Length: 248
Image (tube, rainbow, N blue to C red; front, top):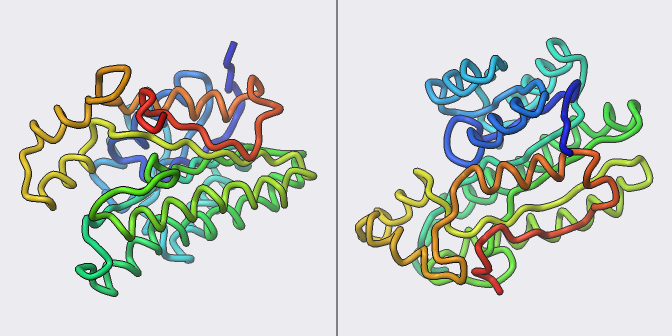
């Protein structure tokens, strides 16, 4: 049903968590994948596991993003799929957060999508289309406590996705957004530590949703693969919660 044979993909934030799981799923379905991350050890391991290519990249840095896309063009011949997944969270209120943390969250979570997308869109247009998938969040749809910068950034990602889908649909470039709920990743454990809570109890609380469990990285990866494939050929501008009915 879903076949990505011959497709060329970039996955940002591919060293761990959702990015790593998605890189695996895309490769299993036939895509060739460039993994981009600031975590060299994790990124190289992901690339090794899937017979892909790793590029060290700070996604908030234009030059680094240019290197990733240039590598994809040189080694793969182009980019058909872009998964803008890299992200960070700083748990704090508007009164507590520093301007530096605010700027960093916005740079990694939002500016990175601008930088990566405008580098791949011209090539996608020349080749007749492509698929861009952005990682939003349930907190991009509804608010959350002590996470003002994260909520603001993911709300921006959600509406940026809609705007991109409108702008680039005529070129057959589909742009969609997955919005994970709490997912068993290192990022979620880091959230618990930021709040002074035990990761185990944090995970237990996160499972309090209609499907009765916490998300797994592969849950999101499989949704990304669907959106990257021709099986979703008429889906664009969609904001898709992958959260066990958490936002419902």
